Image (cartoon, rainbow, N blue to C red; front, side):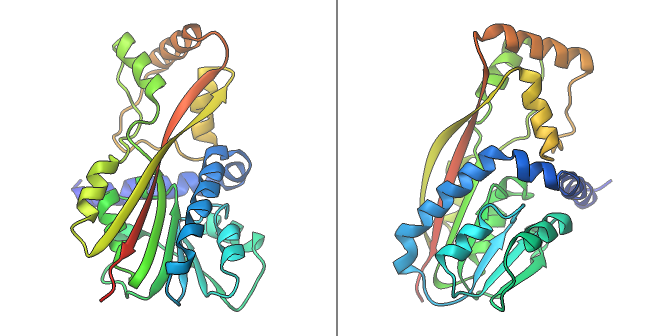
Length: 267
C-alpha cells in the first residue's frame, strides 16, 4: 500500500470514528468546548481588523464554535464545514436556518487551488488531524482575502505528559498520536505572506481512573491511531494500574492547547 492509499485509509477511519460518536461527542467533549470558548474570546480583539467578506469554519464538529461565531458576526455569510457528514448534519439541525448560512463537507487535505475569498477562517481542534498540520493551515491561509484572519486551535505536542511519563517508567510504548509542534508550525507558516501570533495554555481533564481517560477518547471518536501502534490488553492493564497507584486522588490529564492567529498581508 502506498503513502497516498495509507493516508486515505487513515482519514476514512478518523471520519468514520467521529461520525459514529457524534451524539456522545456533543455530550462529552468538554475540553473541545472549553477551547472553543477560548477561541471565540481570541476573535474579539481582532474584530476591528477583519475585512468585509464571508466566514469559513473548518471542522465544525457538533457546533460548539459555530453558534458563537454566528453570534459575533450575525450579518456575515458563513460556511460551516466538516469532513464528517453526520457531524455536519448534527450542527445544521442545531443552528437556526438563515440565508447567510451554508453547510459543506470539506477535507482540507484534498483542497487544491482554493479561491482566496474569506475574511475570517476559524477551526477548533481540527488541525491535528490534517496529514500535515502546517501544510493544512497554509492551505487555509491561502483561502484568505488580503487582510483576512485565520484563527485556529489544536492540542500541541506537550499534551498527555502524565501518560508519557508512566510509559517511560514502565518501558511501554507511548501510543498517543504525534501532535503538532507549535514552533515548527509557526516557522513553516511564516514562509507565507502572513503575520503570526500564538499562545499556549494547559487544560487539565480529571477522571476517577486512568482507564476512564482511554474510554473517553474512544467515546468521543478520538481514539484512531495515526501510527498503528497499540498496547496489548496486558500492557494496557499494567499501564492503567500503575497510573492509578501513582496518584492520591483523581487522574489528571494535561492538554497542551495552542491558539494560532494568522493575519494575511495586505497586497
